[in-house]
Amino acid sequence: MSKSFLPIMLASALGTAALLSVAAPAQVIRNHNSNAPVDFDAGAIELQDRADRVILTGGVTATQAGLTMRASRVTAAYTSNGGIDVNRLDAVGGVTITKDDLRASSDAAIYDLGSNLITLLGNVRLTQGANRLSGGRIVIDLNAGRSTITGGASSTGNTGRVTGTFTVPQRKN
Image 1 (tube, rainbow, N blue to C red):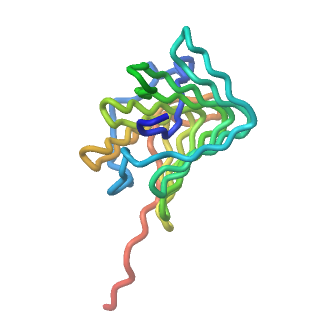
Image 2: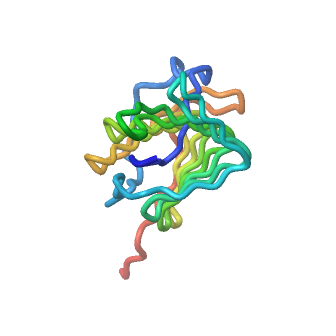
């Protein structure tokens, strides 16, 4: 697949309507090269030519320019113009994204390559060093270098609010 291949998946049944309108800034994936080639590893791959998609299953791992994504299942939607041009990646099942000291996890995620947006949905956890954030949804804008996390009610008892801990440097009095 010639275009960026950072797999991440749609989960429309996660109750996105329950998301709160309160947003908090979150850690950012900085300086990511979404045009870099991607290496992937999966238990199985199914090419569905008539549907213009590829389905990867069985402990999928994809690495692109220092960014690694893991999920149980990834679906890549593409157009074929003499080659494969991937335009959307959907992942489900224990999604984890890591780059440098950043670690994000969720139930599902979507990578829209046209707009360079990564959206993680359901039980989102974001960790960078000692800083931690939790919520229902995070949108990572790779163009703007900005991430926004919102709360969302969940079946695990999440209150629908964004929670977290930020460390502060130790100052001498």
